[in-house]
Length: 98
Image 1 (tube, rainbow, N blue to C red):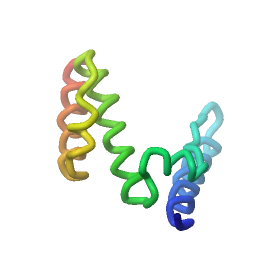
Image 2: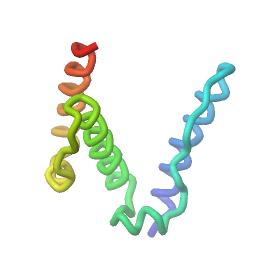
Image 3: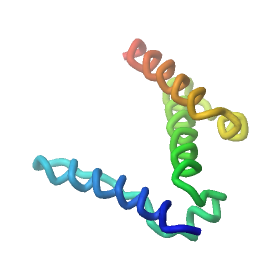
């Protein structure tokens, strides 16, 4: 496994830290940089990682909007573009519900 995934995650974590420290009262979580953790999920590249994070976002948004869990396997099979479109739709649904 290359360090490319590690560098990708470190960049995301650095951006989160910068955002959190920019103003008082902010905090952020960090993504684990343990590559063995990600390899256990079959994730070894930044592209796989980004796809996994999109799937996770749609999964959590679906639970929030509908109160039920979507099918993880079906989400994993979707393209990044399909997942991004789903996020837009779920965001609109969430905003209109409030």
